[in-house]
Length: 86
Image (tube, rainbow, N blue to C red; front, top):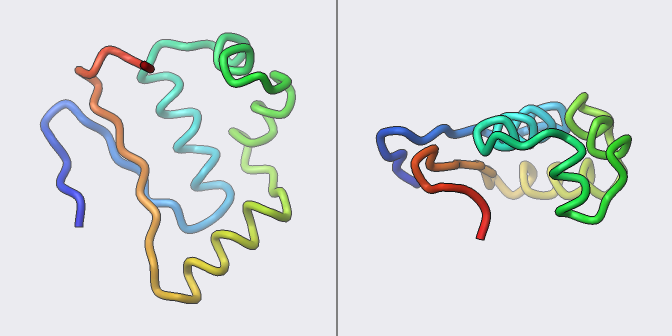
């Protein structure tokens, strides 16, 4: 089980909306706009906005379902003191 360091945030991902909240949360923690992240990740800003709003994609939904079926958990964590992407 991962441990969370002081100054870090953690999101438990059990659904597509959970994933969207995590993406938005990490983006905000890093001080990025949707457009900046979209540019950095080579995706359309509208796609990122849909993900952050919890819009489902078949691949993400199926992947999370498989992991849940196997009893696995997915956690996203970010250290606010880390300074951003590398």
